[in-house]
Image (cartoon, rainbow, N blue to C red; front, side, top):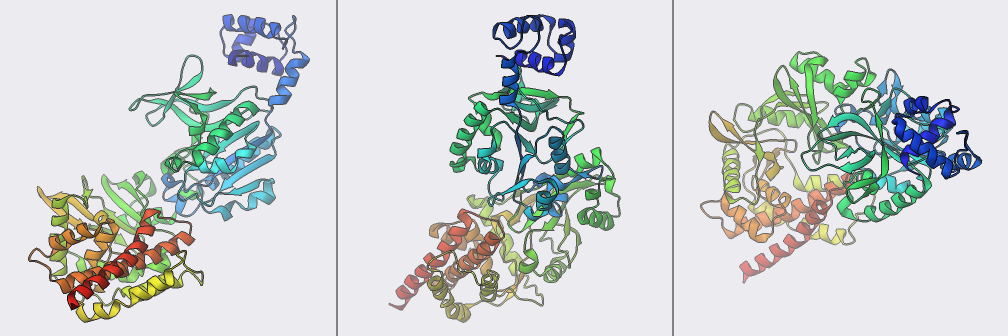
Length: 587
């Protein structure tokens, strides 16, 4: 049976047949289509000659009736900054009602009580739903590194005759029914440049070419038994392929250039996917979540009001913080919000002292506000800036020249970045848990043995950036000339400035040849073997330092993949290289 015939049958289930013209009006199909479908339904035995439903039709409804729902609520909701720093997106309120509660109530209205909620980020916030609404929570432990394709894989056994629903949807009218006869995926009639699909004349969902617009994807889907089996198989295959770690679950709906399910089109005013702070403000200007600490800080720091804060856009999530871009009074700014566990990692009073020491030195970005207590920071956005390309020789040479000029200012602050002390500190944050590396104890012992060489040959301590990595060198233009700014001074303190060289190398994941090239770019006059070996020592020590840091962050649910593994490798490999170099010098 085709989709149009199912639509006609659905209308006949809801209201007895009166006339084909009325049936055309209620179904949305033409009179000719209605006439054709009635003949097909009679021939296939779903209705009789009086256009009344048969037992076969009632059985069809019973077999395909919705029985359960899966709500996807595991993700960070990164585009919801700054709200997502305080509340998961599913609990955002519209007119005083959390989005996920509205969805659950609408499901209950059509007698769907078997509801699974896949949670991850701030999962504890959803725990009350178990008692209040009788839902079952499915925990996605990999929400930080994998998209909702993995979430749906955890619920793949519950997709038969099920609705799949994103948690950030607000529907004016209940989008669910007690009866469904075919699988569908919901889109709106709104044209969306970010959409990858459009509705064709057959009500199929087909892919659109790159740089073309499609129908806005709402994300609610219904799957019958047969289609659920196909999706389950697709999900199982795709979720095993790491190339799909960042993919949305809709990948499992495609067969070549189209989805295996039909389109269900709603008017854009009837359903809203709330992805951003400004979308929430537009739909409910009095929403409680609009009154976030971050927005209040911006208002106080820039002497403005909330509705003057516009164009809020999430920036790429950093290793330590979450940041977002916004416009206020025609000026662009970046606000930094400290990430998970950073209160244990970074002393914000010391950071503020560093910014005071480098003020007016034309070294860093322009600070509009910094709070030594919370760590909130507002900086002016640098237009048309780009980061250093660590594999571009000219970029690297310019950055090393800038870095050395900073070191030669010999600035001072009252605190030190103690590399060996921090190494022990990060390990202490594991709270007694052993390292994930089998040979950690021996590796640490080897690295600590390098301290005596470092102490003998350490340079005079000056204010050192510590995190002078390629991503923190910004190339921009000032007064018509190229300028380089060094940003993100969270870890800065008094230290041997050559530590910054080591940090650049290990973040860029350089091999030994590239490391030697970088050292030459910093020491244009040449670098003697004693200093070079000391930098190798720093590479080993700092590799273990950031490996320990990564292990702590991993315990918080944040995994840095290859970066973490490579840092540990630096600790082992450069300990060996130092030993070989020292043996060679002593011969």
